[in-house]
Length: 317
Image 1 (cartoon, rainbow, N blue to C red):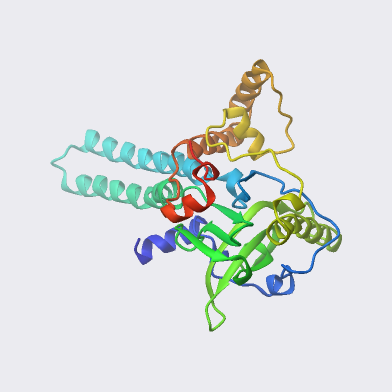
Image 2 (cartoon, one colour; image 1 turned 90 degrees about the vertical axis):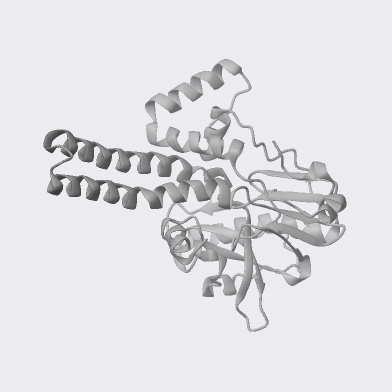
């Protein structure tokens, strides 16, 4: 991936600015891996606890498929418009008309130039970024994560990682916050980073809601801290798992966690139809997540890591 492509992915948001930015807010909200808190919460989203390993999806997993869906639609729309105008010019003026031919070719070039960033973002989310998650191993005290820097699988020690609460938009203060682990170089610069567990969204940007956000994320990190420091039996068991073959209704429930899910197949069908027909923008992203889960690139792990954790730990289709 060249610099121009990297700039495109940064501009559209596929490459998070958080990956190399350690904000002043994060410095003030570093989480203590030794000192415990009285309040503990089970991680709020996709997770699994198997073979003394805790698996947590990255913070924006439930919204993955956004670039795949809207990028594919947007690039196809822009390209089709320019192709239409180019074809109209050819049909009206003929191919022998040099000015008309140049105008038609210009329309095609403009169409490709405007569609390419969206197409590249869609392709990159699916095949470059792929599935991201972190595995916390309480026995070895290792963390196996998919890097936000280059989307490759990596390993670090529990004690060498700095955990904090971070803005979801890097240096930009907003209403989305997440749990993030940072690895630093000797000069203090960020070497690598990864997020884990679901993000926290503040409905209003007030001091009260900010404090509630800090308490919520801190309590969720306490679950991870106790798991790693005190062992798997020190925390409540979790029953969830990272399902990479969700139905459309399950994908909709991920995107909107407060929506009610029923075990009845009839309800699932009706729910999917309603979402698809009446909530088109919502449904586009749901379909994008649906296809993302089924066809995204899965991280590759060294055999030594697989042997240590057990192959059943790693999410698979």
